[in-house]
Image 1: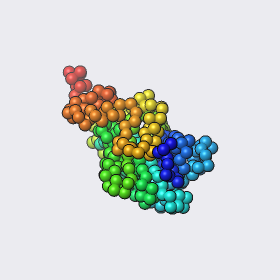
Image 2: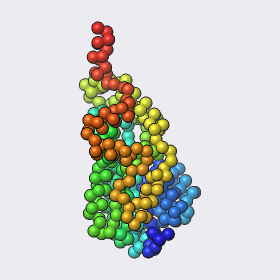
Image 3: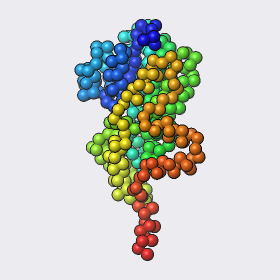
Image 4: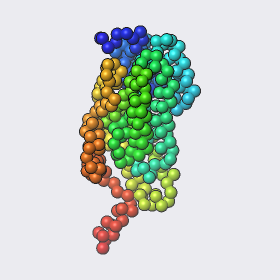
Length: 313
């Protein structure tokens, strides 16, 4: 269509594409006719092999750990060699990890560091590296944050903080890069089934790491039974997540191709509604609403003891 006219190469770097949104997005953009450079953590993994089988020869696989500056630089040089003077039309940053869902006091510092390293610093590292190519084309930078990056939600201290950093970075870059003709968009998807929650085996490993790093007083006050019950929250979360990723894919397409893309997209059920509640209603109302919504029944041991004493009295 007319939106495509004037581009010798309509390209996109999509990261990361081993699984989840990135994987489906790479296939989706390939079907639309994009020349896709799909960054993967494991070039020989099942996700990369599936992309090779199902996509056209326009799609190229890039081995890239976004926490590794050398990997990102090497990917940049490969893309530069391919696009030459045409520049790159779009960069889509979608790599993300969540880690264990738990109270912020319980999470070890390694959980915060890992979330920031992948979700935030990885996004910044890739954006800064590829921006020279976007300046050539006056293209698009699309960063996928999260609903948890726009509103505070219990149990998401590490993940939410890292995604909030992505959202703020994107907003600042949107303002700064406008003088170069580059348009920046942020997505705040709500819950989708993407594999970001991990596997039961990973939850067990994270749980062991969490328990090993707790101080005796914190472990006593919360109680090991409370901590062990946190996995039940993770196991129930997929039931509340949508399996159809098309709202996210369509918003990325709009951000890449529309003449005037939105600065913020909120794909998925209730993402926009919750953002409005947080932005326009008193915080006490928002906090009450979120508590009722999450309906977390487990209670730390120290908070149960007064109730138990009353019952035994």
